[in-house]
Length: 58
Image 1 (tube, helix red, strand yellow):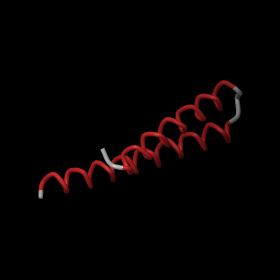
Image 2 (image 1 turned 180 degrees about the vertical axis):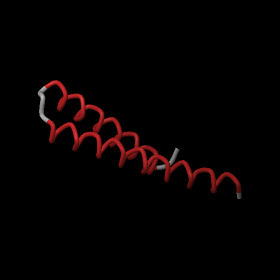
Image 3 (image 1 turned 120 degrees about the vertical axis):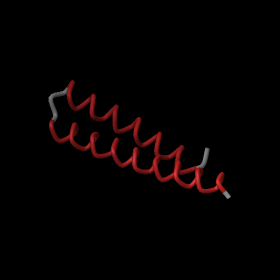
């Protein structure tokens, strides 16, 4: 597991929490911000997965 995978999972988790808090608090802006943060984390995790796959294939 590389640092992009770890950081991506952390961002994804923080985004899910923020999104859920936005739903609970009925705060649309927080919900959208959490959704964006979650998706950015997914992209970063995917980048880390790609790097790991490339490293393992060489």
